Image (tube, rainbow, N blue to C red; front, top):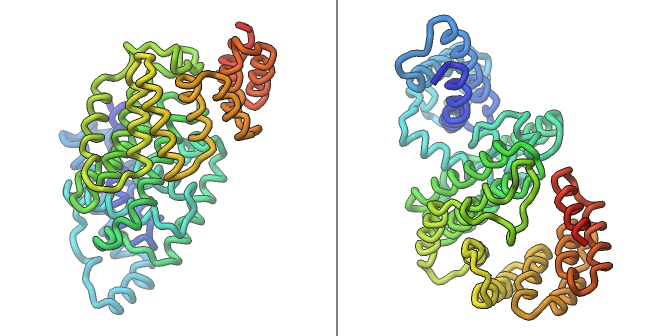
Length: 408
């Protein structure tokens, strides 16, 4: 791999690891220092490798330089004199004098512990996702801004406030005690799923970024499965759900970036390996006596990987939505349920149920009504598609909806 390709690749995979280990070493209060040292390490790589060529083991080179920069900082910085030494004296510990451990085990442990720290309920969900993208996934500020469809200044301020909150609350980088894991794990899983949704349902036109967001969410979830203390049924259910959704990623858009409706997707583009993995993790999730929303959503997603349009399929989906709405009501889940209802009990009953929701600020509400009214009242179908068009946020969505209007 050439230098111009290798360094960006290593930045994506190793930057986050260096930051997580340094944050664990210094504490969340010094998170900016960890980011500076990691950034300086890659800056040094871009300069030195450009002159001397790529070293035999680039990753080891990065770790070695990061260690040295961290040690140099600790021995010369004013933070060391004014903050770290007093802290050491108060706590009677010598942690800051220890060798920085960038072993694979410590890297993995640090990322897992950082996940629980970042997902602390004291900061907002948007901030949790932003920090996860930055610290756990190694995304740049510009990439995060793209994911949230906002500007870099907004993201920078949001991340700064979140870091200040974590510092003020003195959040420790650690896995909670076994008794606390279940309570905190829910927030962690919510953050991971929101991160996944930022990619899967994003209106960003950057297809590579959208897919990367999904893969990063799946990687974080798999880290929880690898740890015996966090390998819970609901964690397996969430990973199963993401596998099933991701299996249809390539079939959801055409080459122009326009959305392809489920019924029109080319099932040969579905990733059968991911479907198999989804089934495996769904089976793993069957342990235990509690059914979470992730179990039900994963089962619904499983049915959507079965292309056959049968009553058995849609009745299964409908019953799962009924249970899901009992566990955690969501207007969007209720809206999605009406599509399954139309397949089982007919369009008119589904229209009646959908219109009760009155989601008049949601383009998908009007898109679904447009689909349901087709063949029953094409005038109303067209009117609903036109409402959906007016609410659509991207040109690709507008084009997809306009094609439905043209067919009428």
